[in-house]
Image (cartoon, rainbow over all chains, first blue to last red):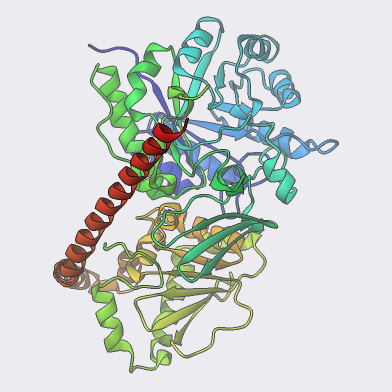
Length: 330
Length: 226
């Protein structure tokens, strides 16, 4: 049996990672400019305009698309970096921009009507009314769904909206209402929403205390890892805290999303594209994750099972979960 | 590669053995080699220094835990410098951040063969100091597509082909040696592992016994409560 293939959308934090993603079989690569206009504004990461032009050439020569994330929210009274990012992406001929802010969606629709527009997960649009609004008003063609929906909910959503859906299948797991989470901002004054970075490295400290590793974010101790215990990211939502006399992960464990075995169900739910998270990860991660999902997508299209690859070595805390796709809580 | 339980404990590898042999040599002897390496890096991978330009003049201490040496990296875009320090030499006071791990893991990281976050999650890599500077360095290096062998060969001109053959042979010998070391490590720790397994099994039996006694006591208490 063969059927329509899912589109594989892969991360690139550097031109080297873009080439690694394309070489490993990405259908599309998403990336950001080297500033606060995207939600992975990490030091030493991302693309300047020349690098994007070269990356576009490489991707298009290999039949891959390039999507540019301009998915943080413009600072009040200072929209120029965001509108310039949209203008430059259009000028350089990218295949789509991934936007979150309503004003920026409006700007892109009016100024560059031919530029394909995707709605970022940062917009947190997860019901038919919200998605239809973005489609009707700004001509959005695809929506990236938040990582809080079950497969049944995604299937129901797809029956009621006029646009494509893209879902996360691997990588960092953010279970908060994205674009509206203020945890990082509360602790550091910076957030993915406005400055493009969650739990910025400038506010992170790691301290070795004997065999134990302590991670701190701002003035908060986020976690203490015993000898031999795998570590995780130092974000507040993945902190291990003492509450009611018990030490536990209050919000979420340090673990990665991995639903490589669920691609047939996602196809049946009407999903168009699969997103691998991790623009901040190295090209070794990109190569390994993309190659595994390339094979899985091809297998799914041929009607074969897709749970054949072990990606534990590149997961956070060396643990993985199906997250809300297999929601076991109420 | 063997997985150390903690980064301060070096893995048993050929690097560790080589480190013992290197110990009597003064680090200053390495300096001309390191200077050539930095000139090569600057010439072949200028993007590394450009990507680091967003961070205010960092100074890194790179500490391979299986060598009796540490390295101070000053990634100045015009005159980058790598300085070797002996075990007893104090690092500069103004070190921005320290990166610590087994040498082969650090080389894998440098050449982008391994993901830095994965290395950190598995606790093979330790970071201290300014995390932002380390993240910038990691991203800059990962984006540069450094290949140490190709970079060195590029400087050899006509000697490139025989040097490549010699390096290939050396890599084969090193790989064999690493596998032998792993076998040796397994043989050395096997008795201790067997003892630990026996103790763990005894502990599990005790825990089960205590749990069953607790359960019996609760049942008896309920039966005698009016």
